[in-house]
Image (cartoon, rainbow, N blue to C red):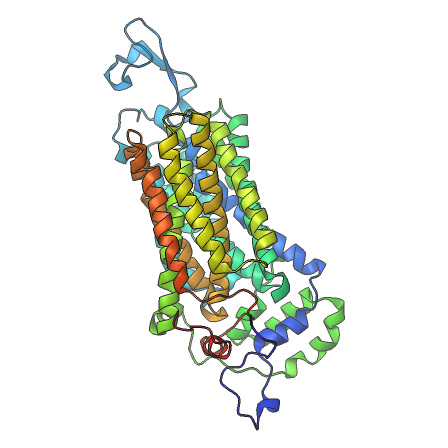
Length: 511
Protein backbone atom coordinates (compact mmCIF):
# COMPACT_ATOMS: atom_id res chain seq x y z
CA UNK A 1 0.00 0.00 0.00
CA UNK A 2 1.27 3.46 -0.87
CA UNK A 3 1.48 5.97 1.90
CA UNK A 4 -0.02 9.44 1.73
CA UNK A 5 3.27 11.19 0.89
CA UNK A 6 3.08 12.92 -2.53
CA UNK A 7 5.18 11.27 -5.20
CA UNK A 8 8.17 13.36 -6.32
CA UNK A 9 10.60 12.88 -9.17
CA UNK A 10 13.62 12.47 -6.90
CA UNK A 11 14.32 11.96 -3.27
CA UNK A 12 13.78 15.28 -1.50
CA UNK A 13 16.52 16.77 0.61
CA UNK A 14 15.35 17.05 4.21
CA UNK A 15 16.06 20.79 4.29
CA UNK A 16 14.01 21.48 1.17
CA UNK A 17 11.24 18.93 1.59
CA UNK A 18 8.63 21.54 2.49
CA UNK A 19 9.45 23.53 -0.66
CA UNK A 20 8.96 20.67 -3.08
CA UNK A 21 6.08 21.23 -5.55
CA UNK A 22 3.14 18.82 -5.40
CA UNK A 23 3.19 15.91 -7.78
CA UNK A 24 1.07 16.06 -10.90
CA UNK A 25 -1.07 13.21 -9.64
CA UNK A 26 -1.74 14.89 -6.31
CA UNK A 27 -2.66 18.20 -7.92
CA UNK A 28 -5.00 16.64 -10.47
CA UNK A 29 -6.64 14.60 -7.71
CA UNK A 30 -7.37 17.79 -5.77
CA UNK A 31 -8.60 19.68 -8.83
CA UNK A 32 -10.93 16.97 -10.12
CA UNK A 33 -12.55 16.65 -6.72
CA UNK A 34 -15.25 14.08 -6.06
CA UNK A 35 -16.64 11.89 -8.82
CA UNK A 36 -19.25 14.09 -10.52
CA UNK A 37 -21.81 13.89 -13.31
CA UNK A 38 -19.46 15.37 -15.91
CA UNK A 39 -16.84 12.70 -15.22
CA UNK A 40 -19.47 9.94 -15.31
CA UNK A 41 -20.81 11.07 -18.68
CA UNK A 42 -17.31 11.31 -20.10
CA UNK A 43 -16.42 7.84 -18.81
CA UNK A 44 -19.57 6.28 -20.29
CA UNK A 45 -19.19 8.01 -23.65
CA UNK A 46 -15.54 6.98 -23.97
CA UNK A 47 -16.14 3.42 -22.76
CA UNK A 48 -18.97 2.89 -25.27
CA UNK A 49 -16.28 2.39 -27.93
CA UNK A 50 -15.87 -1.12 -26.49
CA UNK A 51 -19.35 -2.02 -27.83
CA UNK A 52 -18.21 -1.63 -31.43
CA UNK A 53 -14.85 -3.20 -30.62
CA UNK A 54 -16.58 -6.40 -29.51
CA UNK A 55 -18.90 -6.49 -32.51
CA UNK A 56 -16.09 -6.33 -35.05
CA UNK A 57 -13.96 -8.81 -33.10
CA UNK A 58 -16.53 -11.62 -33.13
CA UNK A 59 -18.68 -10.78 -36.17
CA UNK A 60 -16.98 -13.44 -38.29
CA UNK A 61 -18.44 -16.15 -36.04
CA UNK A 62 -21.69 -15.59 -37.99
CA UNK A 63 -20.67 -14.03 -41.31
CA UNK A 64 -17.97 -16.65 -41.99
CA UNK A 65 -19.87 -19.64 -40.60
CA UNK A 66 -20.51 -22.68 -42.77
CA UNK A 67 -24.31 -23.04 -43.13
CA UNK A 68 -26.19 -26.29 -42.71
CA UNK A 69 -27.26 -28.18 -45.82
CA UNK A 70 -29.69 -30.92 -46.80
CA UNK A 71 -29.99 -33.61 -49.46
CA UNK A 72 -32.22 -33.06 -52.47
CA UNK A 73 -31.84 -36.53 -54.00
CA UNK A 74 -31.46 -40.15 -52.93
CA UNK A 75 -27.81 -40.17 -53.98
CA UNK A 76 -26.68 -38.45 -50.77
CA UNK A 77 -27.12 -38.81 -47.03
CA UNK A 78 -26.70 -36.38 -44.12
CA UNK A 79 -23.34 -37.97 -43.27
CA UNK A 80 -21.96 -37.66 -46.78
CA UNK A 81 -18.99 -35.47 -47.57
CA UNK A 82 -20.43 -32.44 -49.33
CA UNK A 83 -17.31 -32.11 -51.47
CA UNK A 84 -17.82 -35.57 -52.96
CA UNK A 85 -21.47 -35.06 -53.89
CA UNK A 86 -22.90 -33.84 -57.20
CA UNK A 87 -23.92 -30.20 -57.03
CA UNK A 88 -27.57 -31.00 -57.78
CA UNK A 89 -27.86 -33.59 -54.98
CA UNK A 90 -27.79 -31.14 -52.08
CA UNK A 91 -28.71 -27.54 -51.18
CA UNK A 92 -28.12 -25.03 -48.42
CA UNK A 93 -30.79 -24.70 -45.73
CA UNK A 94 -30.60 -20.90 -45.99
CA UNK A 95 -30.17 -18.51 -48.93
CA UNK A 96 -26.68 -18.51 -50.40
CA UNK A 97 -25.87 -14.97 -49.28
CA UNK A 98 -26.29 -15.69 -45.56
CA UNK A 99 -22.58 -16.57 -45.32
CA UNK A 100 -19.43 -15.93 -47.33
CA UNK A 101 -18.89 -19.72 -47.45
CA UNK A 102 -22.13 -20.40 -49.32
CA UNK A 103 -22.12 -17.23 -51.45
CA UNK A 104 -18.61 -17.72 -52.81
CA UNK A 105 -18.67 -21.54 -52.87
CA UNK A 106 -15.92 -22.03 -50.30
CA UNK A 107 -17.33 -25.16 -48.69
CA UNK A 108 -14.57 -27.31 -50.21
CA UNK A 109 -11.78 -24.76 -49.95
CA UNK A 110 -8.80 -25.43 -47.69
CA UNK A 111 -8.90 -24.41 -44.04
CA UNK A 112 -6.30 -21.74 -44.84
CA UNK A 113 -8.62 -20.06 -47.35
CA UNK A 114 -11.65 -20.34 -45.07
CA UNK A 115 -9.73 -18.86 -42.18
CA UNK A 116 -8.04 -16.14 -44.24
CA UNK A 117 -10.51 -13.35 -43.29
CA UNK A 118 -10.21 -14.02 -39.56
CA UNK A 119 -6.44 -14.38 -39.81
CA UNK A 120 -6.25 -11.12 -41.76
CA UNK A 121 -8.27 -9.37 -39.07
CA UNK A 122 -5.97 -10.52 -36.27
CA UNK A 123 -2.90 -9.69 -38.34
CA UNK A 124 -4.32 -6.21 -38.82
CA UNK A 125 -4.83 -5.93 -35.08
CA UNK A 126 -1.19 -6.82 -34.49
CA UNK A 127 0.22 -4.46 -37.08
CA UNK A 128 -2.20 -1.70 -36.15
CA UNK A 129 -1.24 -2.00 -32.53
CA UNK A 130 2.46 -1.75 -33.34
CA UNK A 131 2.03 1.19 -35.74
CA UNK A 132 -0.57 3.22 -33.87
CA UNK A 133 -0.07 2.41 -30.19
CA UNK A 134 2.52 5.05 -29.37
CA UNK A 135 0.60 7.81 -31.16
CA UNK A 136 -1.73 8.01 -28.16
CA UNK A 137 1.26 8.75 -25.93
CA UNK A 138 2.95 11.09 -28.38
CA UNK A 139 1.53 13.04 -31.33
CA UNK A 140 -2.21 12.38 -31.37
CA UNK A 141 -3.17 11.80 -27.77
CA UNK A 142 -5.89 9.50 -26.42
CA UNK A 143 -8.96 11.29 -27.83
CA UNK A 144 -7.75 11.85 -31.41
CA UNK A 145 -6.48 8.30 -31.80
CA UNK A 146 -9.78 6.94 -30.45
CA UNK A 147 -11.68 9.06 -32.96
CA UNK A 148 -9.52 8.06 -35.94
CA UNK A 149 -9.50 4.38 -34.97
CA UNK A 150 -13.29 4.23 -34.68
CA UNK A 151 -13.63 6.02 -38.01
CA UNK A 152 -11.24 3.61 -39.76
CA UNK A 153 -12.96 0.57 -38.26
CA UNK A 154 -16.45 1.80 -39.16
CA UNK A 155 -15.71 2.71 -42.79
CA UNK A 156 -13.72 -0.47 -43.47
CA UNK A 157 -16.63 -2.46 -42.05
CA UNK A 158 -19.06 -0.51 -44.23
CA UNK A 159 -16.97 -1.02 -47.38
CA UNK A 160 -16.91 -4.76 -46.62
CA UNK A 161 -20.48 -5.06 -47.87
CA UNK A 162 -19.21 -4.33 -51.40
CA UNK A 163 -16.80 -7.31 -51.40
CA UNK A 164 -17.40 -9.75 -54.26
CA UNK A 165 -14.68 -12.30 -53.43
CA UNK A 166 -12.74 -13.53 -50.43
CA UNK A 167 -9.56 -11.65 -51.38
CA UNK A 168 -11.16 -8.21 -51.27
CA UNK A 169 -13.07 -9.27 -48.18
CA UNK A 170 -9.88 -10.37 -46.42
CA UNK A 171 -8.07 -7.15 -47.36
CA UNK A 172 -10.88 -5.06 -45.85
CA UNK A 173 -10.87 -7.27 -42.73
CA UNK A 174 -7.16 -6.49 -42.40
CA UNK A 175 -7.87 -2.74 -42.54
CA UNK A 176 -10.70 -3.29 -40.08
CA UNK A 177 -8.27 -4.97 -37.70
CA UNK A 178 -5.79 -2.10 -38.01
CA UNK A 179 -8.50 0.37 -37.04
CA UNK A 180 -9.81 -1.77 -34.20
CA UNK A 181 -6.36 -2.43 -32.72
CA UNK A 182 -6.11 0.57 -30.38
CA UNK A 183 -9.76 1.31 -29.61
CA UNK A 184 -9.97 -0.64 -26.36
CA UNK A 185 -6.61 0.66 -25.17
CA UNK A 186 -7.41 4.30 -25.84
CA UNK A 187 -10.88 4.02 -24.32
CA UNK A 188 -9.59 2.38 -21.14
CA UNK A 189 -6.68 4.77 -20.63
CA UNK A 190 -8.68 7.90 -21.42
CA UNK A 191 -11.65 7.00 -19.20
CA UNK A 192 -9.45 6.19 -16.20
CA UNK A 193 -7.30 9.32 -16.59
CA UNK A 194 -10.38 11.55 -16.43
CA UNK A 195 -11.16 10.52 -12.84
CA UNK A 196 -9.37 10.39 -9.51
CA UNK A 197 -7.60 7.38 -7.98
CA UNK A 198 -10.59 6.39 -5.85
CA UNK A 199 -12.81 5.74 -8.89
CA UNK A 200 -10.20 4.61 -11.40
CA UNK A 201 -10.82 0.89 -11.07
CA UNK A 202 -14.62 1.20 -11.19
CA UNK A 203 -14.52 3.45 -14.23
CA UNK A 204 -12.21 1.02 -15.98
CA UNK A 205 -14.78 -1.74 -15.51
CA UNK A 206 -17.42 0.31 -17.40
CA UNK A 207 -15.53 -0.53 -20.58
CA UNK A 208 -15.75 -4.23 -19.78
CA UNK A 209 -19.55 -3.95 -19.40
CA UNK A 210 -19.72 -2.17 -22.74
CA UNK A 211 -17.66 -4.92 -24.39
CA UNK A 212 -20.10 -7.47 -22.99
CA UNK A 213 -23.00 -5.44 -24.37
CA UNK A 214 -21.41 -5.39 -27.80
CA UNK A 215 -20.73 -9.13 -27.65
CA UNK A 216 -24.37 -9.78 -26.67
CA UNK A 217 -25.81 -7.69 -29.49
CA UNK A 218 -24.10 -9.84 -32.12
CA UNK A 219 -26.17 -13.04 -31.68
CA UNK A 220 -29.26 -10.83 -31.35
CA UNK A 221 -28.54 -9.02 -34.62
CA UNK A 222 -27.55 -12.29 -36.31
CA UNK A 223 -30.74 -14.03 -35.18
CA UNK A 224 -32.95 -11.15 -36.34
CA UNK A 225 -31.24 -11.23 -39.74
CA UNK A 226 -30.74 -14.99 -39.91
CA UNK A 227 -32.37 -15.23 -43.35
CA UNK A 228 -30.69 -12.11 -44.72
CA UNK A 229 -27.34 -11.47 -46.35
CA UNK A 230 -24.21 -11.48 -44.22
CA UNK A 231 -23.69 -7.92 -45.44
CA UNK A 232 -26.64 -6.80 -43.34
CA UNK A 233 -24.76 -7.63 -40.16
CA UNK A 234 -21.85 -5.40 -41.20
CA UNK A 235 -24.31 -2.62 -42.03
CA UNK A 236 -25.97 -2.87 -38.61
CA UNK A 237 -22.63 -2.64 -36.79
CA UNK A 238 -20.76 -0.12 -38.97
CA UNK A 239 -23.25 2.74 -39.38
CA UNK A 240 -23.73 3.30 -35.61
CA UNK A 241 -19.94 3.40 -35.22
CA UNK A 242 -19.72 6.31 -37.65
CA UNK A 243 -22.21 8.33 -35.60
CA UNK A 244 -20.33 7.42 -32.43
CA UNK A 245 -17.07 8.69 -33.93
CA UNK A 246 -18.72 12.07 -34.50
CA UNK A 247 -19.81 12.19 -30.85
CA UNK A 248 -16.26 11.43 -29.73
CA UNK A 249 -14.84 14.23 -31.85
CA UNK A 250 -17.17 16.90 -30.48
CA UNK A 251 -17.93 15.85 -26.89
CA UNK A 252 -15.03 13.81 -25.47
CA UNK A 253 -12.30 15.63 -23.49
CA UNK A 254 -8.61 14.87 -23.85
CA UNK A 255 -6.75 13.42 -20.87
CA UNK A 256 -5.46 16.27 -18.64
CA UNK A 257 -2.56 14.05 -17.56
CA UNK A 258 -1.42 13.55 -21.15
CA UNK A 259 -1.81 17.28 -21.88
CA UNK A 260 0.46 18.15 -18.94
CA UNK A 261 3.07 15.56 -19.88
CA UNK A 262 3.09 17.06 -23.40
CA UNK A 263 3.50 20.59 -22.00
CA UNK A 264 0.02 21.79 -23.04
CA UNK A 265 -0.78 23.29 -19.65
CA UNK A 266 -3.54 25.71 -20.65
CA UNK A 267 -5.53 22.99 -22.43
CA UNK A 268 -5.13 20.73 -19.40
CA UNK A 269 -6.47 23.44 -17.08
CA UNK A 270 -9.45 23.98 -19.41
CA UNK A 271 -10.21 20.25 -19.41
CA UNK A 272 -9.97 20.06 -15.63
CA UNK A 273 -12.35 23.01 -15.28
CA UNK A 274 -14.92 21.29 -17.49
CA UNK A 275 -14.94 18.01 -15.53
CA UNK A 276 -14.15 19.22 -11.99
CA UNK A 277 -16.86 19.25 -9.36
CA UNK A 278 -18.14 22.47 -7.82
CA UNK A 279 -16.25 21.95 -4.56
CA UNK A 280 -12.88 22.11 -6.30
CA UNK A 281 -13.33 25.55 -7.92
CA UNK A 282 -11.11 27.22 -5.31
CA UNK A 283 -8.25 24.90 -6.15
CA UNK A 284 -8.68 25.51 -9.87
CA UNK A 285 -8.32 29.28 -9.41
CA UNK A 286 -4.73 28.85 -8.28
CA UNK A 287 -3.99 25.84 -10.50
CA UNK A 288 -2.12 27.78 -13.14
CA UNK A 289 0.46 28.93 -10.59
CA UNK A 290 1.51 25.40 -9.67
CA UNK A 291 4.73 23.94 -11.06
CA UNK A 292 5.62 20.33 -11.70
CA UNK A 293 8.79 18.41 -12.25
CA UNK A 294 9.27 17.71 -15.92
CA UNK A 295 9.95 14.36 -17.48
CA UNK A 296 13.54 13.96 -18.52
CA UNK A 297 12.54 11.88 -21.53
CA UNK A 298 11.50 13.51 -24.79
CA UNK A 299 8.40 11.49 -25.72
CA UNK A 300 8.07 11.69 -29.51
CA UNK A 301 6.42 9.26 -31.89
CA UNK A 302 7.44 5.71 -30.99
CA UNK A 303 9.83 6.91 -28.33
CA UNK A 304 7.48 5.50 -25.67
CA UNK A 305 8.43 2.00 -26.80
CA UNK A 306 12.10 2.97 -26.73
CA UNK A 307 11.69 4.24 -23.17
CA UNK A 308 10.07 0.98 -22.10
CA UNK A 309 12.91 -1.04 -23.63
CA UNK A 310 15.71 1.22 -22.37
CA UNK A 311 14.63 1.08 -18.72
CA UNK A 312 15.43 -2.41 -17.47
CA UNK A 313 12.66 -2.47 -14.87
CA UNK A 314 10.06 -1.29 -17.42
CA UNK A 315 11.19 -3.83 -20.01
CA UNK A 316 10.97 -6.70 -17.50
CA UNK A 317 7.51 -5.63 -16.38
CA UNK A 318 6.30 -5.33 -19.97
CA UNK A 319 7.62 -8.73 -21.05
CA UNK A 320 6.13 -10.38 -17.95
CA UNK A 321 2.72 -8.80 -18.52
CA UNK A 322 2.79 -9.83 -22.18
CA UNK A 323 3.60 -13.43 -21.25
CA UNK A 324 0.62 -13.59 -18.87
CA UNK A 325 -1.77 -11.98 -21.35
CA UNK A 326 -0.57 -14.27 -24.18
CA UNK A 327 -1.91 -17.27 -22.27
CA UNK A 328 -5.17 -15.46 -21.52
CA UNK A 329 -5.59 -14.64 -25.22
CA UNK A 330 -5.26 -18.28 -26.19
CA UNK A 331 -8.43 -19.09 -24.21
CA UNK A 332 -10.20 -15.75 -24.68
CA UNK A 333 -10.29 -16.06 -28.48
CA UNK A 334 -10.02 -19.83 -28.73
CA UNK A 335 -13.15 -20.68 -26.76
CA UNK A 336 -15.61 -18.66 -28.90
CA UNK A 337 -13.94 -19.82 -32.13
CA UNK A 338 -14.31 -23.43 -31.01
CA UNK A 339 -18.05 -23.21 -30.40
CA UNK A 340 -18.74 -24.58 -33.88
CA UNK A 341 -17.23 -27.90 -32.79
CA UNK A 342 -19.73 -28.29 -29.96
CA UNK A 343 -23.15 -29.89 -30.33
CA UNK A 344 -25.02 -26.73 -29.40
CA UNK A 345 -27.04 -24.13 -31.24
CA UNK A 346 -24.58 -21.51 -32.49
CA UNK A 347 -26.72 -18.56 -31.42
CA UNK A 348 -27.14 -19.95 -27.91
CA UNK A 349 -23.48 -20.89 -27.58
CA UNK A 350 -22.31 -17.40 -28.52
CA UNK A 351 -24.95 -15.87 -26.23
CA UNK A 352 -23.80 -17.99 -23.28
CA UNK A 353 -20.18 -17.01 -23.86
CA UNK A 354 -21.14 -13.35 -24.15
CA UNK A 355 -23.13 -13.61 -20.92
CA UNK A 356 -20.04 -15.05 -19.24
CA UNK A 357 -18.39 -11.67 -19.71
CA UNK A 358 -21.09 -10.00 -17.60
CA UNK A 359 -20.33 -11.81 -14.31
CA UNK A 360 -16.62 -11.42 -15.13
CA UNK A 361 -17.13 -7.65 -15.27
CA UNK A 362 -19.19 -7.73 -12.06
CA UNK A 363 -16.51 -9.70 -10.23
CA UNK A 364 -13.90 -7.25 -11.43
CA UNK A 365 -16.04 -4.27 -10.44
CA UNK A 366 -16.74 -5.40 -6.87
CA UNK A 367 -13.47 -7.16 -6.04
CA UNK A 368 -10.86 -5.07 -7.85
CA UNK A 369 -10.31 -2.87 -4.79
CA UNK A 370 -10.44 -5.77 -2.32
CA UNK A 371 -8.09 -8.35 -3.83
CA UNK A 372 -4.42 -8.14 -4.71
CA UNK A 373 -3.74 -8.04 -8.44
CA UNK A 374 -1.17 -10.84 -8.33
CA UNK A 375 -3.30 -13.26 -6.31
CA UNK A 376 -6.39 -12.61 -8.43
CA UNK A 377 -4.60 -13.20 -11.72
CA UNK A 378 -2.93 -16.35 -10.45
CA UNK A 379 -6.22 -17.83 -9.21
CA UNK A 380 -8.27 -17.07 -12.32
CA UNK A 381 -5.65 -18.21 -14.84
CA UNK A 382 -5.11 -21.45 -12.94
CA UNK A 383 -8.84 -22.15 -12.65
CA UNK A 384 -9.35 -21.39 -16.34
CA UNK A 385 -6.61 -23.84 -17.28
CA UNK A 386 -7.99 -26.60 -15.07
CA UNK A 387 -11.54 -26.26 -16.43
CA UNK A 388 -10.31 -26.17 -20.01
CA UNK A 389 -8.39 -29.42 -19.55
CA UNK A 390 -11.29 -31.05 -17.68
CA UNK A 391 -13.63 -30.23 -20.55
CA UNK A 392 -11.56 -32.58 -22.69
CA UNK A 393 -11.91 -35.42 -20.19
CA UNK A 394 -15.64 -35.01 -19.56
CA UNK A 395 -16.64 -34.18 -23.13
CA UNK A 396 -16.93 -37.84 -24.09
CA UNK A 397 -19.48 -38.57 -21.35
CA UNK A 398 -21.54 -35.39 -21.05
CA UNK A 399 -21.93 -32.64 -23.62
CA UNK A 400 -23.74 -30.45 -21.08
CA UNK A 401 -20.91 -30.77 -18.57
CA UNK A 402 -18.40 -29.97 -21.29
CA UNK A 403 -20.31 -26.81 -22.17
CA UNK A 404 -20.43 -25.85 -18.49
CA UNK A 405 -16.68 -26.28 -18.04
CA UNK A 406 -16.07 -24.33 -21.24
CA UNK A 407 -18.15 -21.45 -19.84
CA UNK A 408 -16.29 -21.50 -16.51
CA UNK A 409 -12.94 -21.50 -18.29
CA UNK A 410 -14.01 -18.62 -20.52
CA UNK A 411 -15.41 -16.70 -17.54
CA UNK A 412 -12.11 -17.03 -15.66
CA UNK A 413 -10.15 -15.96 -18.74
CA UNK A 414 -12.40 -12.89 -19.14
CA UNK A 415 -11.96 -11.96 -15.48
CA UNK A 416 -8.20 -12.45 -15.69
CA UNK A 417 -8.07 -10.26 -18.78
CA UNK A 418 -10.06 -7.48 -17.08
CA UNK A 419 -7.78 -7.53 -14.05
CA UNK A 420 -4.64 -7.66 -16.20
CA UNK A 421 -5.67 -4.45 -17.99
CA UNK A 422 -6.18 -2.58 -14.71
CA UNK A 423 -2.94 -4.07 -13.39
CA UNK A 424 -1.05 -2.82 -16.46
CA UNK A 425 -2.52 0.66 -15.98
CA UNK A 426 -1.00 0.76 -12.51
CA UNK A 427 2.38 -0.73 -13.44
CA UNK A 428 3.39 2.00 -15.89
CA UNK A 429 3.45 5.83 -15.69
CA UNK A 430 1.37 8.20 -17.83
CA UNK A 431 4.10 8.94 -20.38
CA UNK A 432 4.19 5.30 -21.57
CA UNK A 433 0.98 3.87 -20.15
CA UNK A 434 -1.00 3.74 -23.39
CA UNK A 435 1.90 2.10 -25.23
CA UNK A 436 2.42 -0.51 -22.50
CA UNK A 437 -1.29 -1.32 -22.40
CA UNK A 438 -1.43 -1.57 -26.16
CA UNK A 439 1.53 -3.98 -26.19
CA UNK A 440 -0.29 -6.11 -23.63
CA UNK A 441 -3.38 -6.17 -25.84
CA UNK A 442 -1.27 -7.10 -28.86
CA UNK A 443 0.06 -10.04 -26.87
CA UNK A 444 -3.56 -11.07 -26.28
CA UNK A 445 -4.21 -10.93 -30.03
CA UNK A 446 -0.99 -12.80 -30.73
CA UNK A 447 -2.16 -15.59 -28.46
CA UNK A 448 -5.49 -15.54 -30.28
CA UNK A 449 -3.80 -15.98 -33.65
CA UNK A 450 -2.85 -19.54 -32.72
CA UNK A 451 -6.40 -20.39 -31.65
CA UNK A 452 -7.97 -20.92 -35.12
CA UNK A 453 -5.29 -23.46 -36.05
CA UNK A 454 -5.70 -25.32 -32.76
CA UNK A 455 -9.50 -25.26 -33.11
CA UNK A 456 -9.25 -26.78 -36.60
CA UNK A 457 -6.85 -29.49 -35.44
CA UNK A 458 -8.93 -30.07 -32.31
CA UNK A 459 -12.07 -30.93 -34.28
CA UNK A 460 -10.86 -34.54 -34.23
CA UNK A 461 -8.80 -34.51 -31.03
CA UNK A 462 -10.12 -32.05 -28.42
CA UNK A 463 -6.93 -32.17 -26.36
CA UNK A 464 -5.08 -30.43 -29.18
CA UNK A 465 -7.41 -27.46 -28.70
CA UNK A 466 -8.96 -27.27 -25.25
CA UNK A 467 -6.14 -29.19 -23.62
CA UNK A 468 -3.44 -26.94 -25.02
CA UNK A 469 -5.52 -23.87 -24.16
CA UNK A 470 -5.59 -24.96 -20.54
CA UNK A 471 -1.90 -25.79 -20.34
CA UNK A 472 -0.80 -22.49 -21.92
CA UNK A 473 -2.94 -20.19 -19.75
CA UNK A 474 -1.96 -22.12 -16.62
CA UNK A 475 1.78 -21.90 -17.32
CA UNK A 476 1.71 -18.28 -18.50
CA UNK A 477 -0.29 -17.25 -15.44
CA UNK A 478 2.61 -18.25 -13.19
CA UNK A 479 4.70 -15.35 -14.54
CA UNK A 480 2.57 -12.90 -12.55
CA UNK A 481 4.58 -13.89 -9.47
CA UNK A 482 7.46 -11.81 -10.88
CA UNK A 483 5.46 -8.55 -10.84
CA UNK A 484 5.09 -6.07 -7.94
CA UNK A 485 1.73 -5.56 -6.24
CA UNK A 486 0.04 -2.26 -7.15
CA UNK A 487 -3.30 -2.25 -5.32
CA UNK A 488 -3.83 1.07 -3.54
CA UNK A 489 -0.75 2.76 -5.01
CA UNK A 490 -0.88 6.32 -6.29
CA UNK A 491 -0.67 6.50 -10.07
CA UNK A 492 2.58 7.93 -11.46
CA UNK A 493 3.08 10.19 -14.47
CA UNK A 494 6.80 9.96 -15.31
CA UNK A 495 9.44 7.24 -15.39
CA UNK A 496 11.49 8.96 -12.70
CA UNK A 497 8.46 9.29 -10.48
CA UNK A 498 7.66 5.60 -10.89
CA UNK A 499 11.20 4.65 -9.90
CA UNK A 500 11.09 6.86 -6.83
CA UNK A 501 7.62 5.58 -5.88
CA UNK A 502 8.72 1.96 -6.12
CA UNK A 503 11.84 2.61 -4.05
CA UNK A 504 9.95 4.70 -1.50
CA UNK A 505 7.36 1.94 -1.00
CA UNK A 506 9.94 -0.87 -1.01
CA UNK A 507 8.57 -2.34 -4.23
CA UNK A 508 10.84 -4.43 -6.47
CA UNK A 509 11.20 -1.81 -9.21
CA UNK A 510 13.16 -4.29 -11.32
CA UNK A 511 10.33 -6.78 -10.96
